[in-house]
Amino acid sequence: NIRNLAMEKVATTVMFPCKYVSSGCSVLLLHTEKANHEEACECRPYQCPCPGASCKWQGSLDQVMNHLTMAHKSITTLQGEDIVFLATDINLPGAVDWVMMQSCYNHHFMLVLEKQEKYDGHQQFFAIVQLIGSRKQAESFAYRLELNGHRRRLTWEATPRSIHEGVSSAILKSDCLVFDTSIAQLFADNGNLGINVTISMC
Amino acid sequence: NIRNLAMEKVATTVMFPCKYVSSGCSVLLLHTEKANHEEACECRPYQCPCPGASCKWQGSLDQVMNHLTMAHKSITTLQGEDIVFLATDINLPGAVDWVMMQSCYNHHFMLVLEKQEKYDGHQQFFAIVQLIGSRKQAESFAYRLELNGHRRRLTWEATPRSIHEGVSSAILKSDCLVFDTSIAQLFADNGNLGINVTISMC
Ligand SMILES: [Zn+2]
Ligand SMILES: [Zn+2]
Ligand SMILES: [Zn+2]
Ligand SMILES: [Zn+2]
Image (cartoon, rainbow over all chains, first blue to last red; front, side, top):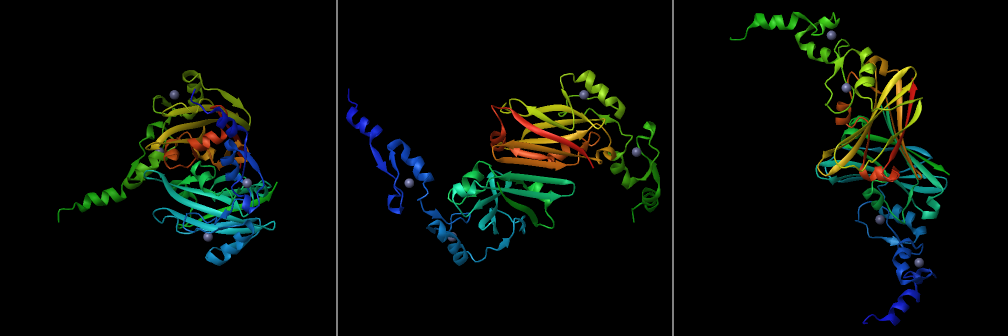
């Protein structure tokens, strides 16, 4: 028998520290639990929440807003629970992101509209809201995205993502408001699409 | 000059009867108006409203329900303004249609869920409601389709189509509730998808 039973025993009983121990996490984990915990670990640094991977910034949650204000000056902010996110020139070709901030309930939310071609020749739009905050904080909110047209309305309601998890995995799973270019045309006015965004506490 | 000015003059001033004159339409039209009118003409026979082109029945509006009852016995009917349209086995491969009837406000509505592959390798679902009635009658109603999941809701509100126009052109334009298989998975339970359907008068 060439299995090393002693080492197997170690792997199933020895506890390892989380890799974010130096950032303040004191959790000890079995080898098999490490990857899952570290992905969700509150001590893992926050990445820049802007869609696309171009900005490499990372830091703590309380530095995120400062980073956005300094490094992403072009992002506009609207105040209030109920605002209109106006995406201009939605017919621009290729992958495009529209981003804006909404402030309410003493929190900041980032609204993202992403146009991409997941399937060959089929452009889709993905709209989603993420909280500048932790997953736990995100759970106390709900958001509603609404496209309003002539005798038509398309609505998506969900829990905001935390910027700690980000929006790309939700977009990949279509766990957001998804619509194609024909629907965009039904609701757009002169190439501009208004999305009503309402944040509520739950 | 080889243009026949006399004939051109005829074409722009002579009035022609609608081709459904024998079904009771007394409208007279310019040559250029004929096609549009005849497509919308209330005297044009109604086709069988079942999705797919397999049934070739056509007749008058007041014969449609009788046709459905006699020739499409497998379609179930639910009574009420607010019902659940349960589509079973949504993971069945290929193009599939789910159909049911809803009766309320002394009218019959046909609910259609269609799964098809408009774009290569990308299956989508299209859900829509059509009134067993004329376009004019359809305008006094609104319908809402709702997918409800864990902390998620997707809603589409619109005017029902009349079976006189049918649903295929709306599906082609995505002028209906559209979602892909990933979204279907978010809301389905064990391969069955419940769609809340609410009809209202407006
Ligand atoms: Zn940790
Ligand atoms: Zn950044
Ligand atoms: Zn006519
Ligand atoms: Zn039929």
